[in-house]
Length: 163
Image (cartoon, rainbow, N blue to C red):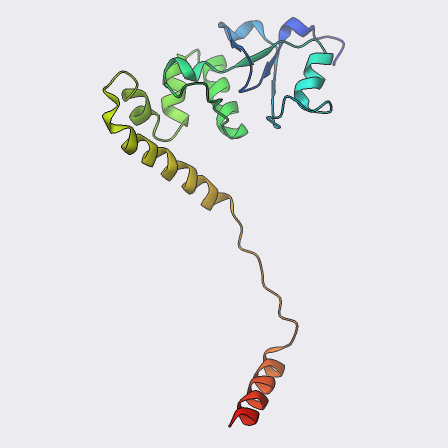
């Protein structure tokens, strides 16, 4: 840890933390975002933060979304943008969530409503997750063991031997 920072001035952001990140965020000089969500491993980022005596916080998204005990893990880019907006622009949490989380309004408006429409909300979440997965997947290049000409020659030989 840098010598000019105290552990109270650093907020360790972990979606599985017990406490919400308190405001104002201006009291923090640095934010450490948890990239590995596993709290159990001895070599995890969570354990490293614990060893450095950093307090773990989570974003207060569950105040707006009722997803039970599920820890909401977001891409680091979205988490950083939300913290940046609340820190630099002094905007409300809900405004930052609405701005950076796709479909947040749909999910948040369903919180206090009759839950007969849970299937629809789950489909929205599944669509968001599948869209994120699709964007994240890269197409693998396929390399053939034989050149196109060699494959055509082998196919021609197979056709001749059959007929």
